[in-house]
Image (cartoon, rainbow, N blue to C red; front, side, top):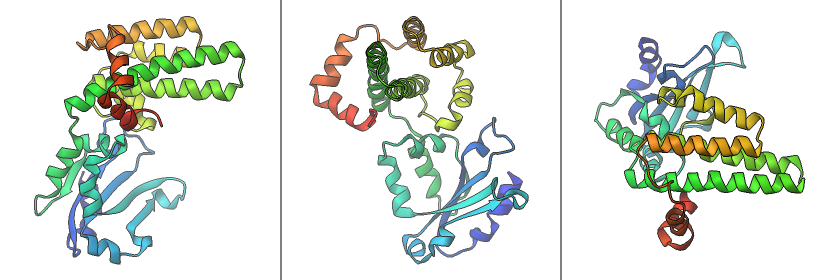
Length: 258
């Protein structure tokens, strides 16, 4: 991190800078040569408002190559930063699980990063039920769509939704906010998801037959058993909760595909 600390030096003494932290693949063990440094700078609202758009987000490229970003600075006003904890977007929670605070002279950034990283158990439980049912329903809809011979785009969209719901379920079962899509497989491996299960998911996606889907559902139920979850063993209660209670409907509105 010596290089990152060097990169932020021009911002350290600037008026209105509340704190600086690093997020993104640069904080993870699977970063590669294409990974850049995502550096976010939290500033007073007044400073942000007076900063030209061209300086609110600045990119620096590797060896002058305009195709590969080396590092970037992204300015965020304090008011926006403090409101992120209410967001339903995983993008505003997962990165903070691994964020590295680089500059926090007043001690205001670290507590906020901790809050953003927290996954409340009630949220985790609600989302697991939502995404598990989404996964099953999309598979069922895809089966019917395939039987009707409907256009391939429709079928691909349903399979994509099923996969998205499933991946979110896996993260939540491991007590993590779902990762950004372009690093999901690496992050699942980091969480200890068995490579065999990921391969089974990949095999189904490559050849989404009814037989593979049935086998995958069984594997996911076994995975949830291993995680000491029980909601999936009897579908009637979670379906009743989702369709006929205010809490379930609200959870689907917040966390379901939309």
